Image 1 (tube, rainbow, N blue to C red):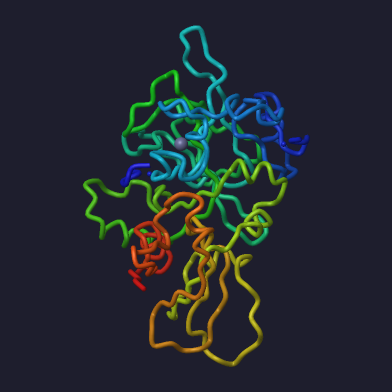
Image 2: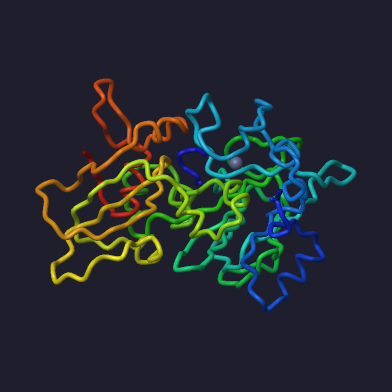
Length: 345
Ligand SMILES: [Zn+2]
């Protein structure tokens, strides 16, 4: 992603849908919380190899279309998965349908592809198990004309047609794909916009808090393979480091995602901060209220260097040549989005 983003084995519980079933899913009043594969490519549900449904970059290495530090020798992070086109018309133009993976609400439509390296994209917000999380569907050729912000959709609701739209790297027709993301929004519009303004980007933040730089994707393939709810999937993630942040601020992130808050023992003391556990990529998975005071604003409480380094360099908690830990550029942005201020160890 450019810096301006201007942005199941596999059992029957995970399935692909064709246009007909998508229609019936969208018209059903029954909420279906079983994830639906976001295109009409059945390869994943048939347990076929990655190459049958993942679109690699120009490198041709299929892992380059998966999630993680999978590009530029582990130095470039890919925040979702790229799902390839399998349906073309006579002129080789992709015809693949794109579907909402879970029930939710359409919260953002970017209809102007020149405003984002994600091109035309749709964001659906899901609220399940005391978690607000999102799925996004990018590089679309077209967005379904019936979509409106605020529209409730079921899993399998048609969102658009897979394509190549982007304002950044030209995606050739042969590599048309859906960039699919699933994750958590970090900042409120206030904290994210404050961070954005401080970066001196050359273009406005067209996408409000639905800008990709404010969205934190998890590994969608691992989620689909897990057969777990989104919350239970998050609970399987390993904590790579823990920060104590002494602040009276109550980030919107934790207000909206109370399922991530550890229950605290009843106390009459005033909360003084947060102990936050992060996974290797910097996802703030576990929140605990602190009641003791500390002269420092931020303290590194625990870290697991192996867990932090084995996935490639995501620039979260990093280490100087003398082994001293420091806050990398990605974690700096994430903390600013969460709390609206800069932190350094
Ligand atoms: Zn992608």
